[in-house]
Image (cartoon, rainbow, N blue to C red; front, top):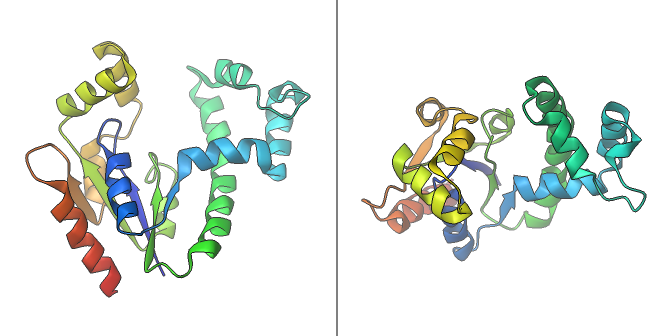
Length: 195
């Protein structure tokens, strides 16, 4: 079974594209959702987070102390990198467990905002990048999250530039509203189901 990584910078519309693939019956693993889940379910990760951030990283009921973790990693690149280095392996384990339940699918999608940055693209057979011009992406984020242009630009600046991702991606879906996305998705779907 093929494992296809799909990514795109903030506001590119990658979630919308994933929904189209789901309508075609293709299972999609959402890495951000998995990351949130493993932080309260993966015992190995929980132990590692407590060791690094202290027992206060979790409340007595087992819930993650998001406020504490955020205050530590916000504006501290070294701490954020450490957090990611602990969470990513747990997400990889979650993906491996998830894929067992989808062996009847011709291929699966692994959606990840930081597919290239985390190195998880190396475990994929192919990668798809969803693109749109920066002004379009920023406008979408402002409308979606009800934030200012400055806040949208700040979020965008924390990601690997789209141009760099284009060099790494095997396939690109243009989601700039000038070209219909459904035919682009269908072409890739045909390609992946033939392999």
